[in-house]
Amino acid sequence: MAEGPGIALPPHQAARILDAQAAGATDRDLQQVTADALGEVYFRQGGTRAHGLDVELTNLERVEFGL
Image 1 (cartoon, rainbow, N blue to C red):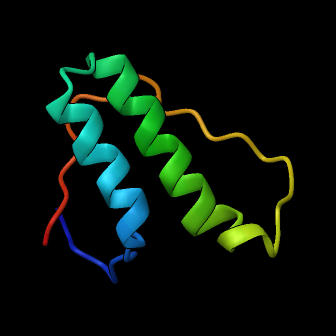
Image 2 (cartoon, rainbow, N blue to C red; image 1 turned 90 degrees about the vertical axis):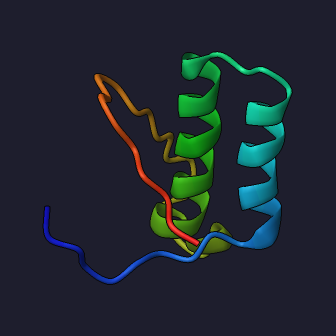
């Protein structure tokens, strides 16, 4: 898979994902937390556009994050 420019999640969004994982969240729960974070950072850009847009991740087989 080709790698393109990355999207940096703000620390509070990354912490939400890691905290959910540490708390034993289900895959579905982790998908929702990740969708919320991506929606905020990528689509809604911190509230500056796409107001009210909901993001849902479905039929995922694999998601990778890098540090």
